[in-house]
Image 1 (cartoon, helix red, strand yellow):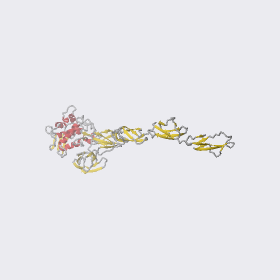
Image 2 (spheres, one colour):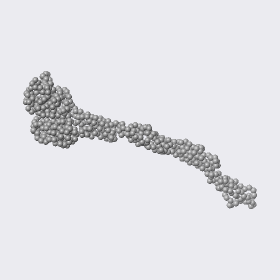
Image 3 (tube, rainbow, N blue to C red):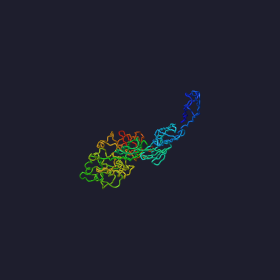
Image 4 (cartoon, one colour):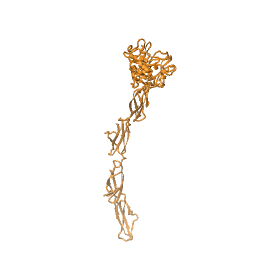
Length: 570
């Protein structure tokens, strides 16, 4: 009785049973075994106790073919998904078949799988089985990285973002909130931008990028105004926003590149550049502060009949002390002389045309015998300069004569210098100025601090303010004094190509006129020689080879140094 081979690779067997004859039975020793048989035909013989024999033949059929399982795996499209699937088909063995998955499923197709390895046992109708293993994979997580270039300067549109896809399945596409489909987008202003990246399987990830910009550059200023003519104030600019450090450029002459600039009267622009090249400009004005504490009186004020405490009374009460030798105006051989306050009352105010005086000396003229408005203005200013020593006239310790004309034809000249020009013209001397120009200047000076209650702004304080009492300044005529005794006029100033320097001294002295730049370096020696007292010297200054800027002119005598700012504007 054969037992056939049921499974591929298995063996069959034969069970022998004998009936009849006389037991016991003996089987031929050289017969094949009855178990572990492969396919084939087998013959067996048997002999009983009496020597009777018999034969039997049986066949072990061929084994079934091997069970073959073919699997088709659908991997997961997007990391973390559960759309994996395994489809199995079976051949070989003996149908029908059954399957049992590690998930417990008995279906030959299993779906909705996450990434992982799944096993199954396939069994045919004869109980033969084979094992199946299927690994469902997934791509790496689809993510992104970005490189952001922020806006350089506030308000610009030069930001950019470059996005890069990581993981997922190439190729990738991208769609920005701007509508761009490029992985690099440029020309962006400050703001937030998003993009959707899609891979070849339709998996998506988002990109979010925020473009920043520096705070807008802004300037604020702290200024100190100029307190004296041709002096310097300061302007300090403070920067907020942008990206430090900052560089500065003031449009001064020369250009200054510091946070705080030393500036003369005027309006200036400073341009500030930050570390990224962003710029902002601001405008600041440096003003000339009012010079206060002085008194000037007009012709009419001094010419008024004494009444109470008016200026006519002041003239009467103080003339002799201020002018013990009397008062005179003019020069050369042409003079007006006044011996008393009453004589001046009889002359002021004087009108008609400004002009030179008549030849000779006219003593105590009256308004009815002689009229000359320039002479009247000169007399009024001479009175104010003489009375300026008295604290009850003018409280300032700075001499009225040292104040500087702040604008117009005589800008840069002192009150005393303008009066000297007036006396030169009254005396018939040569001058680059007309009598009308000088008369206008004297009129404006006499009205500038009228009655000590106004300030028309025509006069500015000198930069070297005298702090000694005015009495000492006026009385001290000693040649060894460190106070400059004489007059210096430079015109025009600012200088384009040539200028004229006029000077005279009250004492004989060696004189040198030199020019220095603002760093104290000697630029030029304009004049060197001896000067006699009372003589007027005229020196030409050729500035054609000098750079535009501010310079210092120094006139050195044996005992003093006169200093003046000189502006070259070639």
